[in-house]
Length: 312
Image (cartoon, rainbow, N blue to C red; front, top):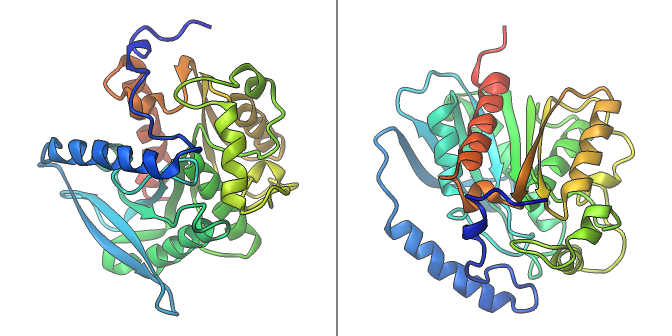
């Protein structure tokens, strides 16, 4: 499976996902993030601000809100959850993606800065995303958001968190989730697929690191609950329209494709995008490439079609 020629030269960057040296990887990521922030252009189209989502007990979770100038109100919204193996990442990691969504869809974007493992194992991150979703609904009038048009989305580990919260919202009759967007999501802690075997050691993500990730996130080596590893959910019925994105050379490929098929079998409306010659997180690593631009455009289009337009 040859890699896309535009993506190949982008491999081999700084080691920001070494689960054997978490502190060192976080320090490297911090330096890279500071460089990116320093060189980030100012947008005349989209503004953003940091705030806190607060629950009734006063617990706070940092949220970054993006809004296009002149956005019609009430607007649709997306609660976005960044990736990073549950261990790495912050609001800067996928800032550019959120800016793109805000510029290209009629939706307010709220990105959540959840607590990270191993310091805060499951369900800390899940609870933080749930809190942010409830806050988005409670603050809808202030933010100019239509509570019937909220999409939950996330990339990699963020996809797992987004899907887990969507399942919980269905099960507990929580906030209405109008759509779900999953970009190369982490879904299955069992690690038994053919793609996991094929990409045991690989860049920028591999099966070896995926297997180390799960005990760090769960706080133990036992099986994961469905809200942590959504592939373990027995019932996928009554979930909202879902966008699933998978990458050809990704250890997560087969669990993503299998989950999409299970959703379809359960009667869920699914839009599946499988990208040939790509690796995990290629749209973040190479957003300027032809395939990276196409992937981001297709994500924004789904967002616009599901929550960007008022529901008749």
